[in-house]
Amino acid sequence: MSTKIHAAVDMLGKPVRLILTPGQVSESKQAKALISGFEANMVIADKGYDADEILLAIEAAGSEAIVPPRINRIVRRDYNRDIYKQRNHVERFFQKIKNYRRIATRYERLAVTFSAMLHLVACVVWLSY
Image (cartoon, helix red, strand yellow):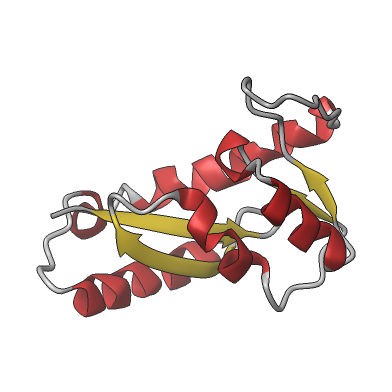
C-alpha cells in the first residue's frame, strides 16, 4: 500500500540513482544497490545504514563511510560530524520532489508508472541546477 523512495545524490544534491521498494522494506537492504558502480571519496548516510556489512562494502569500494553509529552499537565508531552535515543535500532533494503533487501523493497506482514519474521529476530537478 505504500512505497519508499531510496535516493543517492551527488554533492550538489542532483539525483544519481533512485530505487523504489514497498514501504515496509528496510533502507539498509538497498544500500549496496545505491552505491554500486560509483567512485566516490565519501559516502554520507544516516543511522539507518549503520551496519557492518554496509560499512565494509563502502570501504571495499575505496570510499570513506560517514555514517553516525546507532545507539545500540556495542563498539562505538567515530565519524566526521562536519562532513556529515552535508547529508542535508539528500533531504533537500526529497523536498524538491515533494513539490510535485503526483510524487507527494502518489497518484499512480502501478510502481512502474510511479517510477517513470519519479524519474521525470528527477530530470527536472537535475536540469534546475
